[in-house]
Amino acid sequence: MFKLYGFPVSNYYNMVKLTLLEKGFEFEEVMTRPSQEDDFLNISPMGKIPCLEVKEGPLSETSVIFDFLEDLSSDVPLYPTDTYQRAKVRELTKSIELYLELVTRQLLGAVFFGAPADEQLNEKVNAELDKGVAALNRILIFSPFAAGEVMTYADFMLYYTVTLGNMATKKALDRDLCDELPGLTAWLTMMEGNPLVKKVNADRDAALKAMTA
Image (cartoon, rainbow, N blue to C red; front, top):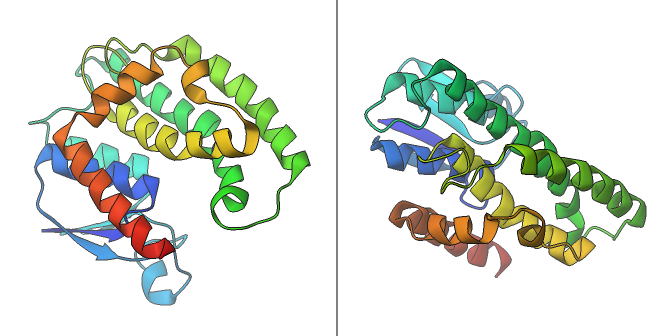
């Protein structure tokens, strides 16, 4: 049985958790925050979450875990079999991370954790979002999934990026990503109808409620 280290408020943790559920792997959740303690650094070199422990040893970095799980089991494929289309899904997944997730993440301190508002930072994020949204509109398909006709890892990256990031952009920048990414609203409705997404989200919401109580 795998061990998944992290906690359900983390969007990256939830991407990996959803992957494990979709593929039907048995796993144990080990509640862990990012840490610089030696014991955790031995399995996650930067002390980040998520980290997945398999029989051969630990793995960190979400995209690496995606690839490992895909190589391990293709019974529920989340990458296309065609080499070029597989690369296009990786391109989209990476673009979502670089140009949307890491950009909106800069707002989380002020929006969720009480850091002071920073107008210079907001201007920087707005400019980065302008470019990132334009780039994503060139490669997102929403037909009906993010990369085409079937669900892929790009959907997992986008869903858990947008559901957190859009709360931040609306509050800090008065920007709603649903207005800027045509097709996003209908896609979110479809994703939220997935029973496994509902399960991951229920665990996330319970953990968030406990954390903020």
